[in-house]
Length: 232
Image 1 (cartoon, rainbow, N blue to C red):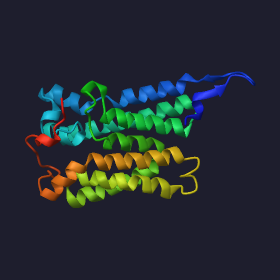
Image 2 (cartoon, helix red, strand yellow):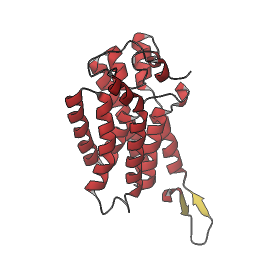
Image 3 (tube, rainbow, N blue to C red):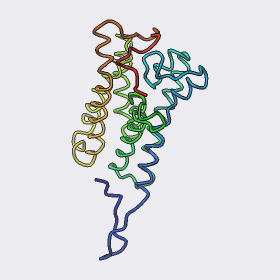
Image 4 (cartoon, rainbow, N blue to C red):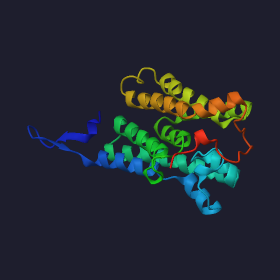
């Protein structure tokens, strides 16, 4: 799966493992697992973000407690760790798309399943946008535009995030249909997997939208419903 992981030291010798891509993949998970929203709320409010608001360890929920500027800052930090993971993979694999995509995937996995929070993290939207800002900037811009339009029209961050998740793989494929399933296949697979994963993580939000209980942008919720609280 990762061509850069193995290379032949010399003709006829036993293949040697290049440890650099492995180091990049490990670093990607470590970066992704930094829970900026959890840390910010703990530092400035002294509470566990998983017990207040929507219960999600992400920028939107943190913003309900700390304000919009804090939400923007946390979003940028979560996105930056996704972009940084891709850049590390690129630097340590000589631009191998499979390693870059693998690093992006592990950054998202680290955000959603951080070891520091007993594998109960956020939903991965911000980190996903950072990953694709580094992998395919134009696809990120197109999907981000979809997010803005849906958020402005509905005032639901959750619906805008689902729309972004759907738009992302479509944009990746549409921008380079001749390469999407050849040289860029790992990136296409990551876009599809990330899109499906983000949409699944928002299934409770969809239920609340249908029930009329999902908070819109600018609204607050006192505490998460019991079925949505992280298990500790």
